[in-house]
Length: 121
Figure 1 (cartoon, rainbow, N blue to C red):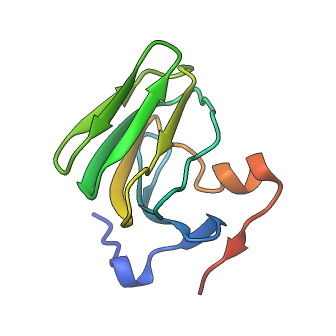
Figure 2: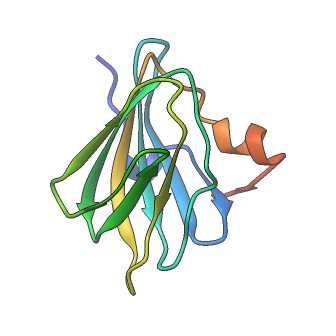
Figure 3: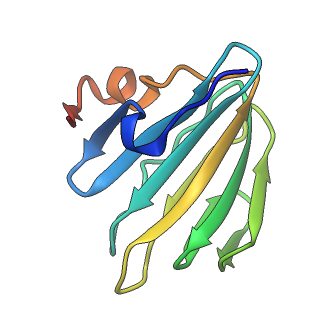
């Protein structure tokens, strides 16, 4: 068993106000807690891992090539590996959630994709 305290989790900020914290970063499974600020949208992207996004607080819009759906707290969206998608926060307050990847995804995905991000203490 491995315990990860949220206060000690590795974290970084791919873009101002958009924070990601690693709760599990194993080859078979990774879990990232995120805070998405109001008005923020992730770039359209894809990855080979399957992803389950779970909204904890606030609301998020998830988009694929085929559809767009608003998620509320407790809702989840599943993206099969390789499916292009984007996540937006169109609300006036921040939204928080969990991204679960199987197999595990490298925690530096956004750093590598965008060519760098600011690291948080």
